Length: 164
Image (cartoon, rainbow, N blue to C red; front, side, top):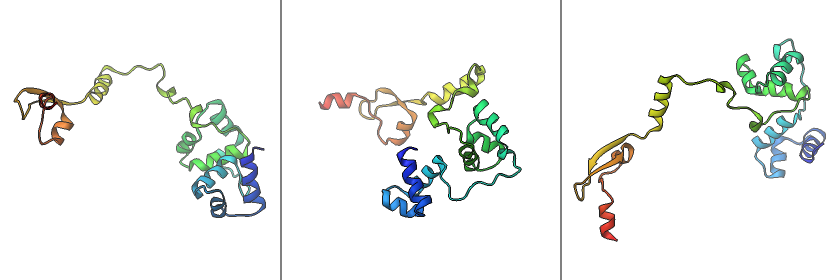
């Protein structure tokens, strides 16, 4: 057992300390302690399996291990809390995949955007620009729309060059 798991198990289960007491002892927040207890599968009460689909070990194994669905994805599909699914994964003794282990590009891999979608993507990434006059030298300048709307005076580089 790793040292953090041993320590939390000792203090929470054997010594019977509360999450608040452990957080004061370790200088971690209560939410950090709760999260670590949850991820390490340390519970005071043993999970009682019911006839729900997520309590079926074979079904959950197929979803989580074989199909590599994340526990939050499975929870959203079933309309339950992600902790419900995470608790079962830990209860069955499977390795919890971390954020870096999840293939975030999987849903779109190998698929191409439609031309209309590409145009929309390009439009959102391009900064809107406006052509105006410099208030100092009356030269035409191009500014990003957001800075134009924010500024009371629109100046070109000429004023800065003359002052140095």
